[in-house]
Image (cartoon, rainbow, N blue to C red; front, side, top):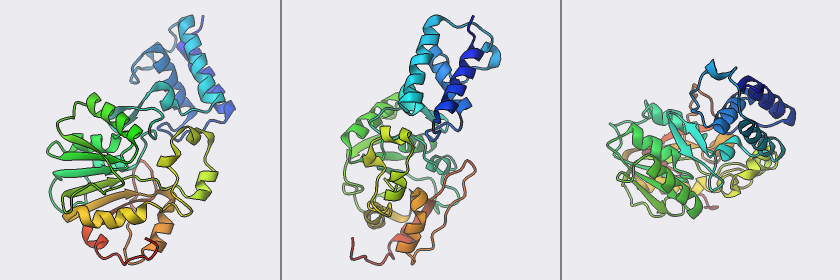
Length: 296
């Protein structure tokens, strides 16, 4: 008789033996094993240890085995196998049309951008390079009085974002726009820009674990220093933000390159309780004092 405990132990052992990388919403082989076994059983993620010694069917055993082939041999991120991932308190549909949601910007959104937002709750928010829309949707939930724009150049990503907007019944407050960064956003119309653009430099792209090769490279790669899109984004943000507006930006390991490129800005790299590097909040006033760059 095979039990849930047996399946969990086997799944964890196989992922560890395969050298799987855990960077897509789960922190360990154990966490992924739990999520995988529960998914294959059709059980909610909050299911407790009371099921551990219950028997499982051969159908369930086969489903776990097939999922482990995808995870361990093909090195697919678990979220692409289950089709769902949690970010903060919300679950999102996920597939290869966009990155697996995992941005630490979610922590700032849940904290209502405190203490970085100088005025009251925002009424107009843009999630630029939105991918599947997770950050903008989370912001819409946190700020019920805000209108949110999800903006992306990739039509496939926007289609997934639209599916997630429907999932959370937010079609009345969220608009989806296909555009190149902030090209289609009106001047001085936005209180907060949430930006998780492609920022992986070439050195890091060359060293990414196999799991990342299943994600769209368009959403990751950003040139030699990781700032190909960020340079333009900063200039555009200075135009579309309202007075006292805020750009909340993630650049990951490219933070040092950003500091070097813009020494006139006093960059504040925010320490986050749940981890994450290269996260900053920049006022519109700082952005409006950027010196022109000939390479832009």
